[in-house]
Every structure is written in structure tokens, then in C-alpha cells.
Image (cartoon, one colour):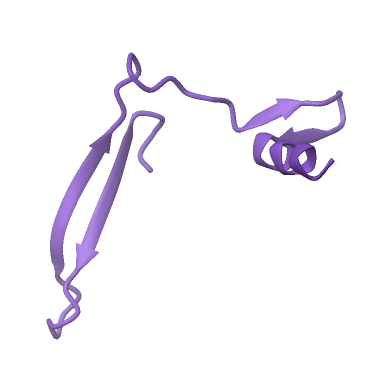
Length: 61
């Protein structure tokens, strides 16, 4: 991941003797179509809860 907008995906060719890159693709997020959701929400001043953990907790209740 380069930043919030760009990620670089690289495939390596297994059949080559050397570590040759087979392909490289930049994945670009379009902010107007895919807004950023926060990964972490502040629970209080001392604790952080990930949204994934919160969703799993709520599903188990």
C-alpha cells in the first residue's frame, strides 16, 4: 500500500531462476466512488476498538 489512494500489486514468476517480476499493477481508489471508512474508532481516551472487532462482538450478542 502506497497511501490511502494507491496500492501496488506485484506478481513474481515462479518458473524463473531469478526473482523476476511478472507483472505489476497499481490499484487506484476513486474517492468519489469509494469513501474511506475509518479502521479504528475511539472508545475513550485510553482504548481503541477496531470496527471489525466491534461488528463481530455485536453479531455474537
